[in-house]
Amino acid sequence: MEEKKCVLCQRTQYEVPLIEMVYKGKSLNICPQHIPVLIHEPQKLATILPDAENFGAG
Ligand SMILES: [Zn+2]
Image (cartoon, rainbow, N blue to C red; front, side, top):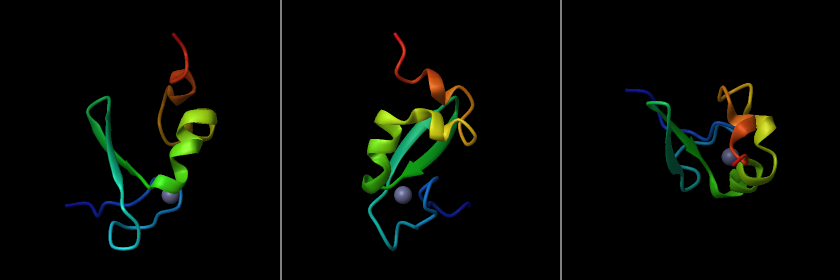
């Protein structure tokens, strides 16, 4: 099983609390420190998550 770690900083659940997200059938984890990136700069996730740039739309 793949180790859970933040998609942005690669820290693991043993270093920081991780929030699990499910997107298009894929499970992803992000740390609280990077939640603002997800909210305010989703385009930064676009290389990791296809279509992430559309998160804020509609
Ligand atoms: Zn992080």
